[in-house]
Length: 285
Image (cartoon, rainbow, N blue to C red):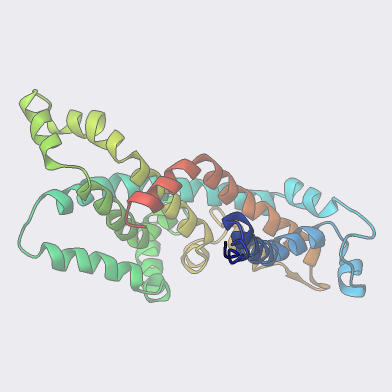
């Protein structure tokens, strides 16, 4: 009887995929470290004195201090910047989403003359740099008495956020069959009741995504918010750019202000994280 040829057994699939998994884990770890390094360094600086920041290089505070945060939380010129920012950003988010909802519904459900041109024109407003509109807004608001008010900045930001919200919501609305509208009308629903009770829950993910982007773009925008405010409605971003004193920049206070500026955005992401995940999976994001 001839001897059977013995061949080495193939490596198990789990062992073959192990190096690939390890490689992905290393890449993801390095990527997360790269992303978190600036945030860590910002927190590190916020817990140091100016003398330590400018005098030595250290990976952690040698003389831990919370005085920088105390300065922000007790000085009205600092903490009112956060209050002003939250006020006009919230107003802008509500206005932008409220205006974008019926507009996106019209674009998704009806065809009319120039609809595609109008939709493209809306998107071009988002493409334009804020510097183009800073001077016209300043002159207009100064003439009508809206300069240095929260509503002035909120309305100025709608110029960029409404087109973005319309674009996002229109993609979600196209995914809802038109038969739902017709069935609701047959059942006796008026448009307002149908839109609020039936249609909006179906696109809740899209509304969450649109509100998130409106909030974030309005929160980080600097040029218009700085140009259209002076004292009463000055946001934190403008306050952080006006901290030069006779002794120079107060680096510790600036770092603490930067850390506190990240917190509202992180909270918004936490509360709408499920909507954002669905939006990236289903919508036009």
